[in-house]
Length: 230
Image: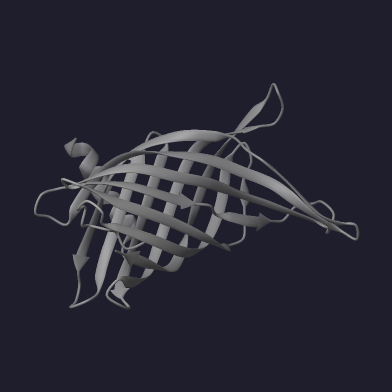
């Protein structure tokens, strides 16, 4: 356990200070809703190496306090970028991932730290869009892998109002890091700037009934957003 916590803490050094401002009050009925616009770069290795251009994506999360220092959290992250192919100019190819997390959080007594355990089903998305005089169509396909993770959330004051926060998790062939800075706009609304990094290994992408290719996907980038706490 000590080794795991040390690994997570060391991972945050890579992230440094740039997800959304975390809810740290887990009283029953307390909640937060986050919306983040992330400018994400997506790359793949493994079966095929692809380097996609950055593209903004809208992500969200919801945290609900359950009482007794427990909370439930849902987060989604869906980066998708365009990459160049040797096909006709009317075809646009893209690569990305679609992941969502369901976490059970436990705040440590009298601290600004919470630990959590959860699952993050992740789907690789590869496809193309064809535009022609006759209209527009889209094709995409991918496979899903359940990534179990354990991690922590923490925040610290760096001024009278400004806070920095981190959320980090690891699992088998899975790294999930997020960090940022928040500033209150009103009593219940905060502005956030963040950095997000996810690395997922061995995501399956079925090619046929008999062949499945496996990709390693990294998605990373800066983002801005708002948090509503109530």
